[in-house]
Length: 113
Length: 115
Image (cartoon, rainbow over all chains, first blue to last red; front, side, top):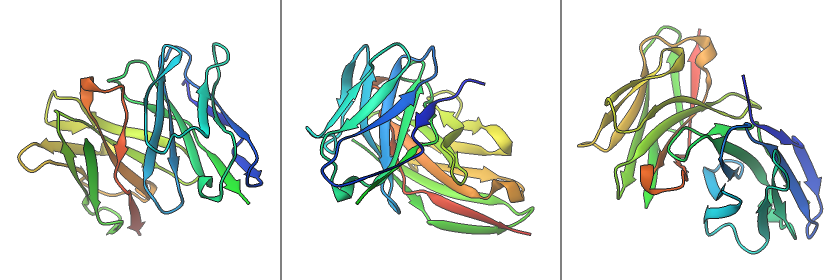
């Protein structure tokens, strides 16, 4: 069964460093998403991506964040200068159509020291 | 704008007992509603969804949910709990066809099943 994969599973970085979180969505899906979950809090929407551009973003998704689909399979989230409060589990998701269910990856736990 | 409230951050039931996880939503447009389950160290897995068809929705693993517009609720039920149902459950809402699929989640309910 096709699934969304994410790498790495755990990333530890120093404050101020850049990190790139990687995701491989399901191959025939067209809509891609990033969510995050700070420990003990809700899963929060960050950004949606369709047709090689951002379709919607939350107020969390400021200039420190960017997304890219560098090739036909990968979907990345970059945080340019990490802050302590960026420590969270980051989930990638994809869907075939925007009204269809989203399939989630296992997440990347980002720890900023 | 959409929002979701899950009543009860922890629910504990005995094996074989009814499972009831509560979800209330707020939406300015007809919503799409979802229940996801998360097992330890895994991603979110879709249990079921409501997308404006039948109000009683059946999902995987014997779960079902009923959309009640008058109560703005989408509670999740299972007649008989199994030990393997122990997990965290998330209710989520999207703005249906008017959005690009952004999901707004509740805070989650941890279900514990006792033997």
